[in-house]
Amino acid sequence: MSHLLVTGGARGIGAAVVRLAVERGFVVSFTYRSDHDAAARLVEETAGRTHAICADVGDPALAPRVVRDAVAALGPVDALVNNAGTTGPLGTFLERTEAETRHVFETNVLGLVAMARAAARAWVAEGRPGVMVNLSSTAAASGAPGEYVEYAASKAAVEALTRGLGRELAPAGIRVVAVAPGSTDTDIHAAAGDPGRPARVARQIPLGRVARPEEIAQVVLFALSPEASYLTATTITVGGGL
Image (cartoon, rainbow, N blue to C red; front, side, top):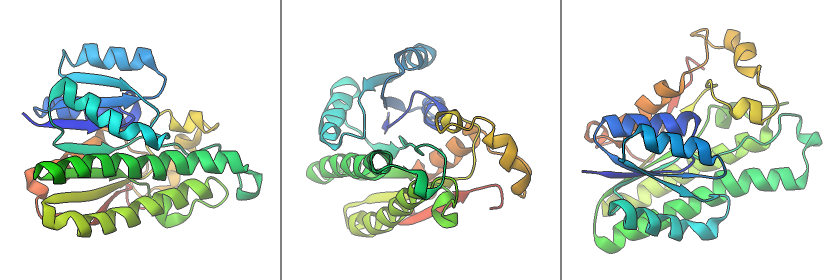
């Protein structure tokens, strides 16, 4: 039985990944930052096949502890999904504060790097293969002008990290893939201050709608699966045509 670790797994795309992974036979550890109720509901819903870890991945020092906690609860980690992320407030680049920009990069880049390093070190030390999926965004390609330029830049960093790590870790049998969703119907938009954004941007998408979290989870689980065994150091875009 494979053990998957998902960051930011209590809500949105992360929770969809957790649910689908359990359906596919994984046991899953997932982190959450503050929504204890959502985490508890997900653990109850998945009937003991999940383990919740309260940790803010924006604090890179916590990454080794998260991996140790997951291993202690459910055994060695076989795969990692770096899903936790934040857009920061919507608005123009000139409106952003240094603190807001720092928070975006601490969560989306530095936290992801720390989790990737903690997992990869364990796999290499144990001589075991592993799979890592990093959540990017179509904003990495568009730059998201007028909305969240720093978020877009952080996700471009995630894609560069994915390419480099995928190539560096391939000889150790470790695959690294990024998945870049377009606009998805989650509460990340409300958190950014614009809950109506999905409906507003839908008409710009060739398929005419935003994604459901479950649609992104399907692609993440594909990237984790043996069917994707020759896929590494690349990004899969799931943007409805964008």
